Length: 283
Ligand SMILES: C[S@@+](CC[C@H](N)C(=O)[O-])C[C@H]1O[C@@H](n2cnc3c(N)ncnc32)[C@H](O)[C@@H]1O
Image (tube, rainbow, N blue to C red; front, top):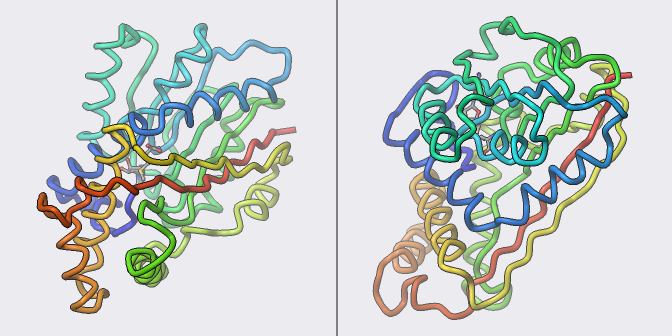
């Protein structure tokens, strides 16, 4: 979920990939209602044909692919990612959950062209399109892969969740870290926060729904959500090393320690996020 750029496009830093994979899994664990809400929204927009074939582009550790196999028990999912590490993590989870025969993994670099794929009833792309060099082209290829009447569900975030109290010094610190993150992503992940409504329409899709799913967890946070706060702020601290002022870097380091001033000792942590989703149809 973090958008420092090391993990993309095959330039693989394996430590970073593994840390990102942990964070993707932790996100699904800490926010267990999010994916079921998204898959229910998708179900509500389907036409009367059954969902048999699903494509997950940029699947990561496959939290979306697994949620889709649960929601659509007759469907098989093709899960595509550039990273073999991510795909291995997905295969392990699919085996553990008894759905290995319903998930096919495919390693492909979407920037290098489009893999050969059968037409699908539903495509899912979550926070992956902004990593590609040319999302316009990827959306056009996606459009061609979805059968007429089929759906694309696109999830694209603009930033990272917030965890610290909105009032006071910590809220100000988190605001400044988010400003630094916005500057970092503007330089390295230019398609983050694109005008997806316009891009989807340009590719030929008809937008059925555009929704912001609100996430709001209040104290006391479940253990996984507290770990998500720590991992996210740790990732921001590492990725923004050159962009934070020295006092802000020190303040974040203190929060990330196990001591009495660390996150683990704070009873006031929250999780606040807005996750935009588009449900679009190929006419
Ligand atoms: C932020 S993660 C999101 C993963 C997953 N969809 C989720 O929401 O948990 C982005 C994923 O896109 C993959 N990715 C980035 N660039 C890619 C490319 N050019 N081709 C295929 N996959 C790519 C990354 O390896 C990573 O797994």
